[in-house]
Image (cartoon, rainbow, N blue to C red; front, side):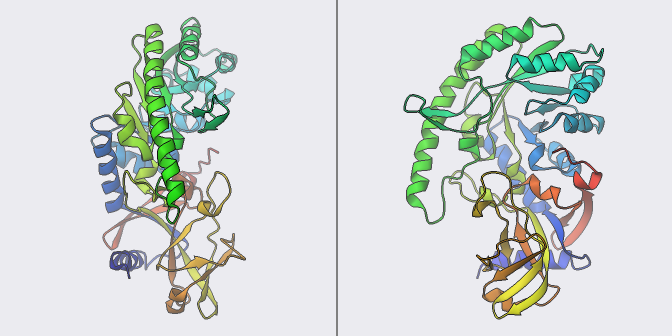
Length: 401
């Protein structure tokens, strides 16, 4: 038996005994420890918090109040504007937008224009922004995105997310010149997200050969990207000498990306919550901080209980790794014929025989912030007490995607 896990289950049950499940909690001791670990791994470079992985204003405020964190990386323009209106001062939009109303608001408000940086990787996006200005003349801050994917066998094999079309340093410099020549825009940053390194675990349980292959791929990807990113930064700085930041990384590659001289700041967010997809890394080990509880509502037979709801799959390619993990009590598993259900989920295993109607089963989501799309509030747990309850984005009526 894992006695630490048993103690955690007991204190989570005590802390939330006065609440009805389903519910979601944030273990603040684990959250703060994970924040400290991100700062340690960033080795002096500021960590920009990825709001997509947090989706709770109170927790964004909490982590940004800690030394070592600076700025937010947002995921929609509407979210970026809302965050600035809520008091945040430095927001980098990590994805291009086609939100014409949002661009009109941005270009017409000096405060917003000074606080929000938008992502561009195509001149057509500049055209869209200009058509959307509706008379607003504020200068729009622009970040260019570098394609970080690893190309093998002469480009016949691609490893990495399909994001920016800008791969070569000269392509980034060309777009930087196009922005500089266009009134109303200014390049202030460069970003590259190496998801094939930062978001892919390299220590898969029971799969040593695949884990070895992933580590070899990631080592090659880091070497190739470090050299190409340094060249890209030099090329862009030749056009924009006062470039403010170069953003890179992700939770799984914080220390490696921080070691690149060309990178000035690190992006991370999932490492605060540590969902199940971040269990399989050799480079770090976080503490699960975000959990949700589903109540036992049926006992269909020996070794089986059924909980209410629980079918909260994560985004990405469909697979078993996208399902929540029955976490506490340990030893429960899904029925392979039913999986995680929208309104009820059968769970199998000997611990089921010790669960009564009304007891909780605690789960971990596969991803971090996506949990907050399912719950209106997070109950903040310290020790064995809930010390506060704070709204998620959903709880504030905000569903940006």
